[in-house]
Amino acid sequence: MSFVLAIDQGTTSSRAIVFRSDISIAARAQQEFPQHFPASGWVEHEPEDIWTSTVMVCRDAIEQAGITAKDIAAIGITNQRETTVVWDRATGQAVHRAIVWQDRRTADICAKLKADGHEPVISEKTGLIIDPYFSGTKVAWILDHVPGARGRAARGELMFGTVDCYLLWRLTGGKVHATDATNASRTLLFNIHTGQWDDQLLEIIGVPRAMLPEVKDSSAHFGESTPDLFGGAIAISGIAGDQQAATIGQACFRPGMMKSTYGTGCFALLNTGTTPVVSKNKLLTTIAYQLDGKRTYALEGSIFVAGSAVQWLRDGLGIIKHAAETGPLADQSDSLQSVYLVPAFVGMGAPYWNPRVRGALFGLTRNTGPAELAHAALESVCYQTFDLWAAMRADWPNSETASVVLRVDGGMTASDWTMQRLADLLNAPVDRPVIQETTALGAAYLAGLQAGVYPEPTKFADNWRLEHRFKPAMSEATRERKLAGWARAVKGVLASDEGEG
Image (tube, rainbow, N blue to C red; front, side, top):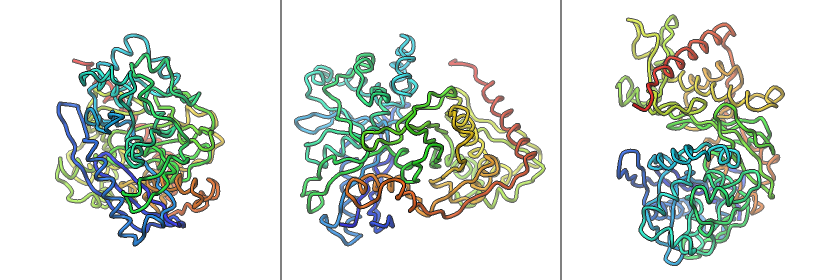
């Protein structure tokens, strides 16, 4: 049994990848599923769509690889984090559609929690801020809006889980209700210092303990899939939320190592070792992974707009037809112009956390054209990454002695121009790996570690292969001038905040 099946259940699609024992990819399959937007700011998924698409892609990938269930040592699961499912313990039926991480319907619940003075204790115990993004207030909303749900939950008739937990329950035929520490750490209900569900947090947010899954290591025996699904029972041995799985797939096992994933937005995680670091710069403190009962922590920062800035150039302005054109176009820009795009299309994420401001362009001249706008859009991703990088290094006391390197993955990393500019502005090497499927690889590794297919972390890290290292080549004077210009542009955007009105 030398294969591992990774389930990568994302926000818009479900994917399955079969990895060999040398971490090369044997097969992959992907299927999109419907998104539901029942009201402004609301985003839902039909849990049955998540389930059926997941089973289908697993079967497709197994068939493509030309293997059977007996060839697969283990299944690993990685998932869209914070998305919330509540279902009936007896029937398995969801009592409401899944409320997706992007959903903002619980803003009023969050505002009341803050007004009632609960933010300090919640932040201290969870490492998070109070925001509709996280699962806890979504569970409370379902219990308060589905008739009879709160009473049924208190009696133990309803179950709560993030997507990994829901899939595990379905895969095991309803035998196992469990999650891992990384997903639990995104709920607002879990104490990241004790590694336990917290009664005070449950009472504050209004979630009955009877609903909650068991929390296990990220690499553990979670159960077995029912034989009817894939032609034989397969052990389920690894679970982690998507950004944590990418951190593992990038082999960021040493404190000070940092990965940044560039998709629609960008998520950066810095491994801080066994110490949970409290951020003074509005970053999140989260669990990177838990192995053998030991928690490893990370600082996390999120940028709302990365790849979507390139989509804006294509779909909004029509100045490119394909994302790949952006780098060559930026290369033709006028070096005498200093055009800055602050892409606050949906507000600004870390380290600013201001949802009210909107985007702006600075430094336009009569000669500004498509090349300069492409340059500004790509550079905006690099500047925002610099802001996260600087905040993380300010928050983490060991940053001065840490080896400074950024490992990158995601669609935008295909642009050599962008990755070189990133290295220039960070004044640090940027490493792009051979295997870009880092999220699925992280899930596969956790499962394969438990199953004995993959070695312990330091040996697995030796398998990480560099595709290209981008080294800084910009003069210090140019770098400082450009960063100062960006800081002025951000200041201008933040100054435009006129409050809620």
